[in-house]
Length: 130
Picture (cartoon, rainbow, N blue to C red):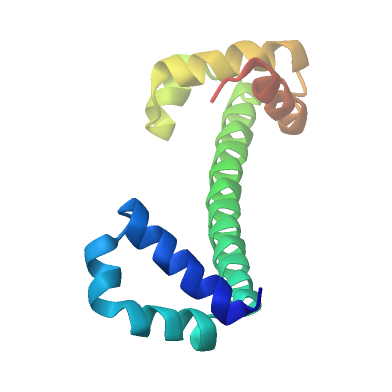
C-alpha cells in the first residue's frame, strides 16, 4: 500500500471509529493532502529533538546555577568557621536560615580545622543537606 492509500485508509478508519469524525468529514481532503504533501517526519523529529535539547540545556543551566550558589554558600560558611564564628552568627551575617547553616556546620565539623569547602560540599551532597 502506498503512502496516499495508507493516509486515505487511516482517515476513513478514524471517521468510522469516531476519531475526529466531524473534523475529518468537513476537512477530509485538506487533511489527506497535508499528510501526503506537507508532513515531513525527519523535519518534525529534528524540531522535536532541537526543542528537547534546548529544554535540557535550560534545565542544566538552572541546575548548575543552584549548585554554584550552594558551593558559594558552603565556602562562605567554611571561611567563617575557620575564624571561629558560631552557626548563629554565621546565619545572621549571611542572612541565611539558621537550621540550614547549622546542618552545614555540623557536616563541616568532620573537616575541622581546615574546613575544606569542597569536602564539606561533597559531604552535604551525600547527606542531602542544602
